[in-house]
Structure formats: structure tokens, C-alpha cells
Image 1 (spheres, each protein chain N blue to C red):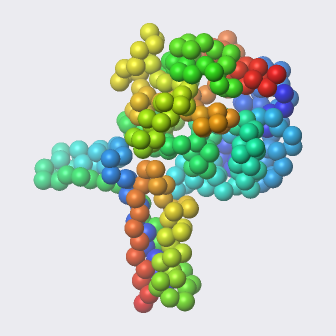
Image 2 (cartoon, each protein chain N blue to C red):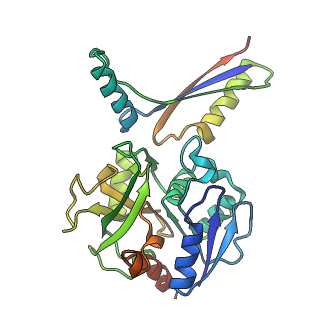
Length: 229
Length: 81
């Protein structure tokens, strides 16, 4: 499967994402410069973490207007698979490809931790290799990961199953302590209505090798790979 | 013409910065302070034929880029002096 990983000025996890996809998952993965307008045949586009455009104005607000994003929006409108991790999630929200927004962590501090996540909907292209309620251990590293959306929209999203991942404790329970950034409804990852665009604050690309503390990130990439077979 | 844009966290949206600043003000002895919000102030010059034209453009800028309607409110002033 062909993966395009977008590199914005200030992207950090672009090379790690290509490494995870190509070297670990055995995929064909290439970098797409943010000024490119062709996605070069990518079957899935990944927007990586980082601090695109220095997080100026708001996280993701400037990157959203990069030339490549017009192609990404068109690709998504045609049903193409798009995944955004961390800053990529923030960009997708700013681009209105995903509902809601990400704002300053409740604690106002940058959080770098390993968290437990519960799979809330396993029947999507991004979660289909997992079981409903399965727990994942993935790292987070962000200052602005508090997910918010209007209450009525949240209710509709819950009803449609668009909340794919939630922060929980090690026993799979939602607790305030497990929701480190203070996200509304402990939301860690959401999909759009068509379930072809997914954004999450945790970093699957940083959890693909046992030596680096876990391999649960593979399950998300594996899901996407299985979904296009 | 000069445009001054004020962007503030939307009512009902968690504003951890505002809350932290409010706590600090209280500990400084300003106990009568409440409802602190921390936002952004953006100012720019614009070449427009009228204040109305500048206003119409500023509104578009706010909606498209300067503010995020999910989490922020905006207002602006046009100074045509």
C-alpha cells in the first residue's frame, strides 16, 4: 500500500512515520512536501506531528492553507483515507475535515507520557484490526491536546460512533486522572462522518518497536492496511 | 486604515489560561476579580475605499483564519483616521 507522509515546515514526526510505515510495516511510504499539489498516488495520506509553522496563531491554523492541503481535502472528499497524528489531528480540525478543535491542555503544561486508550468503535478503516473495547498503550507528547466540540455535535458524533479512542486507566475505566489533557468526554481520537478521515493525539508511529516501549501503534496502521485489501 | 481584532475564548469553552491568570490575581490580593479570559490582539493596516469595505474584509479574515469559531469569539474595530 502506498502512503504519503506530508512534511510541513516544522513537522517533527514525518521521518519517524515513514520509518514506522516503510521499515516496520513493510509499506511503500514517501514524503510529500507541503508545496506539492500531487499526492503521487498515495492510498493513504498521513499528516504527522510537530509544530507546523511554529504553531503560530493556533496549532494547525497556518498549515491548513498549505498547497498540499487542497489536494488532501479533495482526496478526502473522494473517499481517500487520511490520518493525522497530534499536530496532524490539529490541522485536520482546522481544515474542517474533522469536527471540533484542540486547545491548551487543562494543566497548561506540555505532557509527555504513555497513556492507555480504549477502542470505542472497531468497525472503521482505522480500527478494524482491533476489538471493540481493546486497550492500547501509546505515547502522547503535546501542549494542546484538549479536545472540544459543541455539545450537540458531540452527541451526534457519539451516536454515529465517530469517537474512536478514549483516554482510560489501565483497567479500561474513564477517570479524571487518566484524561491527562482534560479532553471533553476523554476523547483521544475522532473520525469524520464518512469514516475515511481520522485524527488522534497519541502517536502510533512511536509505538511500533518493542525496544522503544511497545508495539500497539502497529494495530492502527495494520487496520488501515487491512481495510484497503 | 487600521484594523484591531480581538479574539477571545468562546463562552462555555474551557479557558485554562484565563483560569490560571485569575488564580494568580487572587493570590496577589485582587480577590474581586472574576471571569478572566486570555485572548489575542491582532492589528494591521488595510488599504480600503471605505470603513465598510475594510469591515467586510476583516470579518472574512476572522472567519477564515484569525479565529476558530469552534473555540473562539472575535470582534474588531476599524479606525479610518
